[in-house]
Image (cartoon, rainbow, N blue to C red; front, side):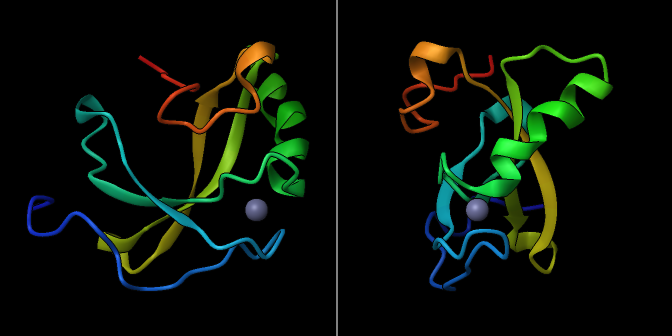
Length: 100
Ligand SMILES: [Zn+2]
């Protein structure tokens, strides 16, 4: 795996659930994700409906899944688990959802 070859993604990808353009985001180093594309729309149906899914996993009520794609894996979609305390839910993942 090499994720130091680029730090932006020219490909335009859109969320199939809300139509918003996916934003490139560098995952925390410990995740080994490198660059991923994320739907940051807090009104996205996928994001809003994911709470129940997370809870069914026994998760925290403030954990949600965002729609994300992995450009290094043929844009395979996956669930980006993001921890969003209520007071941070309107912020960008870089500033608000530090999963640490
Ligand atoms: Zn979306």
